[in-house]
Length: 256
Image 1 (tube, rainbow, N blue to C red):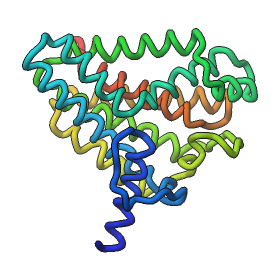
Image 2 (cartoon, rainbow, N blue to C red):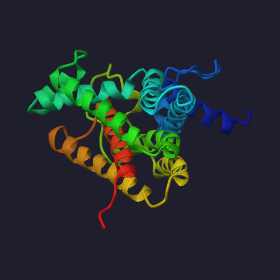
Image 3 (cartoon, rainbow, N blue to C red):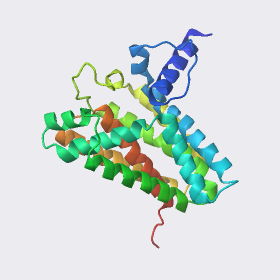
């Protein structure tokens, strides 16, 4: 195998192994350096997760009503990722909801227990995703899932590009990914995220991308104000918020 191709595959599979429970080839080793360079493939992991959810939707919709099919599709995406980003969202909500200064916020986010803020925000986000997808036209659901997962992970990648990682704990679970990425890597991630969007209705796409970008921008400002950067949990929260915002944008009806 060409060394360049092998290295890129190691980067991709490194990201896939970190963010999902899917098996990767045995020849893919564990390398912090490869994991550091894998940010370019975050949206590609989103494509895989979204495709799994989309295919579950297609099959389930043959046998059950739309609400059940959507529930099974969302459950599949959560199962394949091990609720990785949902966990980050709940930790972020607890940290910022219960802490009033940087040290305390980071301490709460590191606590594995889930508090009331985390539960409420997680339930509302999951319910929001379900309700919006149910309201989308059936012909949009498959590509909405694929594009939503890819675009939202690109939003997390953008955060890594423009902000600093703030944890100094040697055992921080997201530390291997907490590096600034290069403009080229960001371009690769962006192109991957936009690819499935081309198969969605053009007149709805701008609002979807705008709302996803807006959610990312708002959270980035919030993080910068309170902790001066981001953590792994913050990235997970951005992914969750941007995914929901993307679906909301697809569903939005402009007045007039």
